[in-house]
Image 1: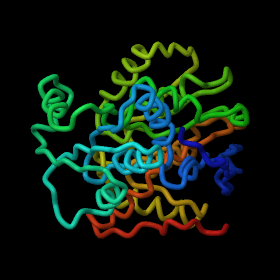
Image 2 (image 1 turned 60 degrees about the horizontal axis):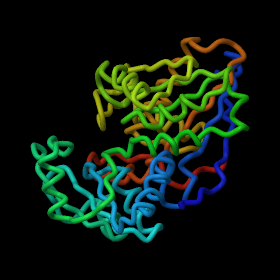
Image 3 (image 1 turned 90 degrees about the vertical axis):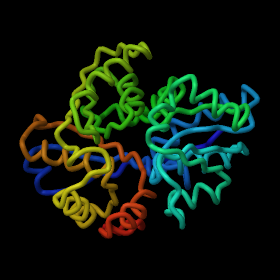
Image 4 (image 1 turned 120 degrees about the horizontal axis):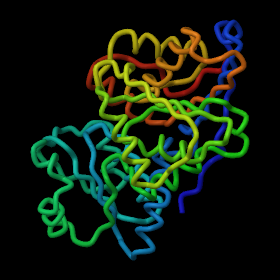
Length: 310
């Protein structure tokens, strides 16, 4: 089984926090494992264990060309002596970008399909086709969210995190949000920041919690107005904020998930959303490997990966 490193919780200091009477800290899941970063570590942990229990020799999953999930699955499978197959959305472009090149170097077999076919990936016909092509494998859904992933993400919070009144995380497929939600203590509220455009995420989260029978009565709130245009979209103010956050706190964010979450959280703090005396814990869900691909794709420089000494 994948073994985690010790995960630090860093306290953040800023005049606005003092002014608002708020304490803010960040849980560094980006440091949970040398290569399997962030929430992906927790999503993959029990899935890979189950693959071994079922006697599978390979895992197969899906993702885009810059996918954190593809990158992490390739790393985790290699660490667990499993073969990996990645079904990649879109045409193969050579040379491969940093994400896919790294996955291939870790032994992942990459298979590219057009976007129309990719949309059919959950159908019986498509799954039968890939079974015929790749043989017997353990299937992990795109983004990694399933029952075993949520079992893993329920372990993100530990006893030392019970002091916090608010837990804040980004939302993609919802597995991390659901796991944390189900592990909240009585005094805690979870706040999610969707990286996707649209209100549909509220219904998806509701259905996910229902299907997984996660009926924790604790309060939750989801913000859908900090997506900056949609998944993998960005605006100038988001990039400027990521640099501001780095200059003030010495911590690197990504523009897909953590940057949007942190931007939204800081905006809420400034607006006075949180009561005086609140203790807020931000979850850094990792994904920093994608910053290289973001710069490749856009030409926009992001803060260096090595943290600054503050």
